[in-house]
Amino acid sequence: RSLPLILCLANPYTRRSICRPSYSACGSRMTEHDMAEREWTSPEQTGPPPLPPDLERRVFWRVIPLLFAIAYTSQLDRTNLAFAALQLDADLGFSRTVHGLGSGLFFIGYLAQLPANVACLTFGVRRWLSCILLVWAVVAGLGAAIRTRAHFLVLRFLLGLAEAGTFPAIYFQLARFYDADGLGLAYTWVATATAVAGLTGAPLAAGLLALDGRGGLRGWQWLFLLEAVPACLLSVAVALALPSPADAGWLSAGERSTLRTRVRWAQAGQGALELVPREAAVAGAGAHDGEAPASEDRADDLPLLASDGGPRRGSAPVKTQGNEVGGVGDENGSRAGTAAALRAALRDVRLWWLGGILLLVDAAMNAVNFWLPQIIRASLRAGIVNGDEGGEAGAEATSRQQRLDVKASLLAGLPFAVAGVGMVLNAQHAKRRHERRLHTAVPLVAAAGALGLLPLTALLLGTAGTVAALTAGAAGIWAVHGPFYSWPSAFLDAQTASLGFALVKSLGALGGFCGPLVVGVLADAEGGDFAGGAFFLAAVALLGAGMTLAFRGSQSEAEPLLRLPSWLRWRQSNTVEHISSVPF
Image 1 (spheres, rainbow, N blue to C red):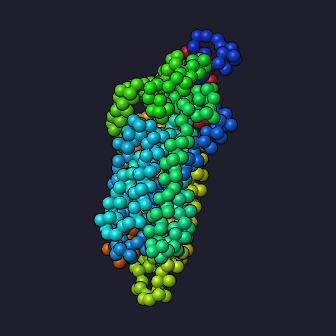
Image 2 (cartoon, helix red, strand yellow):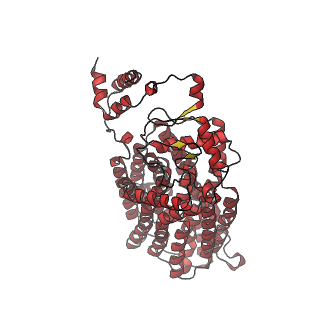
Image 3 (cartoon, helix red, strand yellow):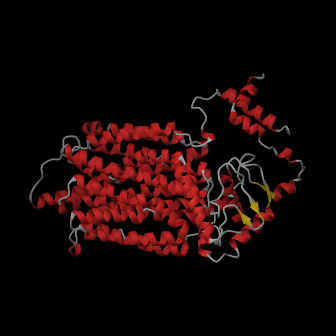
């Protein structure tokens, strides 16, 4: 009978939960009215205050769609090269190595994500996103003027530089409205835009490539010009409509307090118990949302920034009348807080480990992104295993080539359709289970298997086998987005997590450079055979799964993979509940 209690006390995590301050130990008896008038702010005692369904829906529809549109446009403008290359490479005489190098150079510019995110925290999310949208629209449109290999490589680098701050800014914007549990699913809804861009971008590219010859422009030139327009429109939309918790007219003072408390709870870590009267929280919200400081725009854009760098994991949230941890101080304080958060992010080994995982994931993901249409076209020509077939001459060959390009573009949308569904389903399941590691590693193992079998399925089943293997591989790679990207917010405060996210994405950008380039080099070395590239991507995905299984982000995730039997866990949990009710 004492075995569950002994095991319980031997486990440091359950022992910590037993010895935590219980509500009955606070030394006072509270009525139901007192309980209703106070908020729990310690994650050790309870979860965050529940979010009313109506407020949850409003936050979703006011925050997610605009960020989704930004992510969609970003993905469209960076990956339209995969479809443009069906004509561009032949027109300008680019080899597969040059195509892979240009695809990868985008991610060398993308390494600027960390300084770009510091600029975002300095100037404000709204202003920063609006500016970079306009800049990358101009650079993307200039792709139509490419004439030489140098033009091509320089523009790809500049496009990566322009887009570098996009996803870290999106992540920070989401962290202002969602706690750690909700952030993974919210980011997944936004990141689904990458799969939707592949799905809808394929028929859109096919239609634009069909404009070949209109107005004296080639199809790939129309593609670059017209797909740059949405970024210009979004620049205006962000400047006018991007919401912030401080100035959102669709939030009441109480709703602002609820959202802020949930975010603070996620940041508070394992701090001591602290009760805050609702009046103080509302007064603090009023002071934060009403009389704005001199730097009003920055205050609206940085509601979580503290002059000392914000709350840290392992300390309790501190709330006082009219001021909250994570509030915005003066200009010098904000800069000092940003510098402190940056130092904390750079010193955190866990972020570097996550960056190593993302380097491998992005190597596989971006290689699939930039080579998928050409792999399908090679399969349509029966060239994926045995190399490219000989060319034809004359108008008939040109017409056949155009039909082949359009067909390859259309088929390239199917893997992204399945990948989008897989992203959402995996993120929802991870949120319900409160688990990240297996929901990241298992899809990577599945992707490794699918990509490793790609040459065999292509040989046996032709184009159908190629598309099926690419679909399974893309679904596995894209499915890791939600569980993986919610990891930094699970063990860091919001500002450090935002900078940590930028650090992780910057390391991932190295994989984005290497993946497409290595596949291109292998294809050129093997005379157009993509089998070597498929084996390389399978090995990369498998290594990423292994690193994920070895990762321990926080104490709550440091439990062994081998667990006690379910009946013993049930007895243990009941014993913990019984002992926790005793006021030590």
